[in-house]
Length: 209
Ligand code: PRP
Ligand code: URA
Image 1 (spheres, helix red, strand yellow):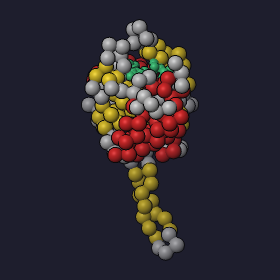
Image 2: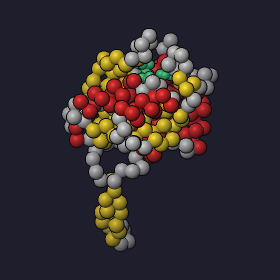
Image 3: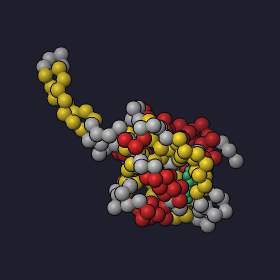
Image 4: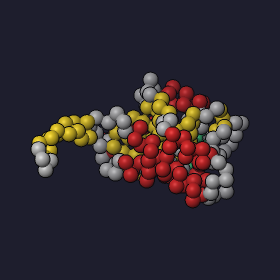
């Protein structure tokens, strides 16, 4: 079973509280999501492999550690996943970004695919799937499945807020994926919204509805 990591750093928890608040406006919401994504990226990259190299300081020889292993790729699920990309890129600037377009049908709650554009070398990269909300898990599972079918290697799913139902669905369908969250909430309501959650992440990021 993949890891389930709740990023409980006080700065993240502080900002998530304001992200949840319905009085937070679109500009503030977007900025806070960007900041939390950047802070979460530290935890998401905690296990990247290092290799030892030698450098010459102005004083002496030194040994240091640099990042080794596979190059990374970020796969935001459109639309709301886009709100987290720039924050993560501040920490992993060399990552390439692919996009998967999925929306959740309001009646059936099933994900509907409408777009997929991936970097040419995506199969060689370690991929982080990004979406602020993990509700039923349908969208995340569909995105991970799409990537696997194309021979890619998604290893991590990064979300701001999840419902237990969504975590369980991903763990059951993709037990190889590590899940990183800023908060694990109580439940889904009858409309498939996370409770207490933050409402509709896409609408709050882009000021729609
Ligand atoms: C939201 C969210 C996830 C999905 C989560 O997207 O960003 O992609 O719902 O729900 P699930 O776990 O039940 O699939 P939405 O479909 O509202 O599209 P949007 O990002 O374009 O607003
Ligand atoms: N998508 C959202 O944006 N919010 C939820 O609570 C559930 C799905």
